[in-house]
Image (tube, rainbow, N blue to C red; front, side):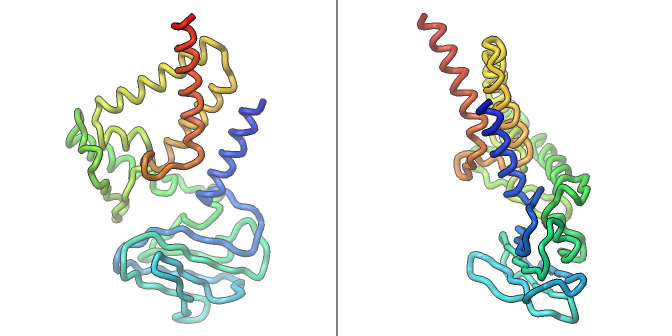
Length: 246
């Protein structure tokens, strides 16, 4: 059905956007969060680079200079998100065989395709989730507030989000807000099951999967895959409204 096709396209786009999968090419971008004084090291394997890699930030971009043969280094002066761009002299779907990224001498799983690197922490998400649950326990009922600046410490680093909508909702609005959100999802699922609407159930299922692994900041960081939740919810509300009006 059309819903399955939409889900497949969005899910594939999501995995590609997050570097969990990649397609054969010769240019790759590593999306990395660095804190002040972090030391990024990029190791070139098999003399595979066409040119010196670039590091890109909001303030501009610079070429990385090798500190010795096949080894590039960058010391971060300002915390934030950085992109490291490399150009290879070969086409591949597994660039981590040709380049290795380390932050403070720890292996980074930011290199695509992450799904093949057997990262059991899911990009350090399991550690972030555990730290998020500890923060929730500090204010479990009403949460820390919608305007709270999210900061979670895990893996020796500071993260600005929990990469999980359920944990993010509980952190900001507490158990009460989480209960409201969960009730809306259950209401949607029950209505769709009653009407045996497999297409919308499929959309809802994949929407839940995606929001369990990505940024929970809905209103200030909207992504296309939020439609996978909004469309089924709208459909369920529409069905329920028609039933009451009939």
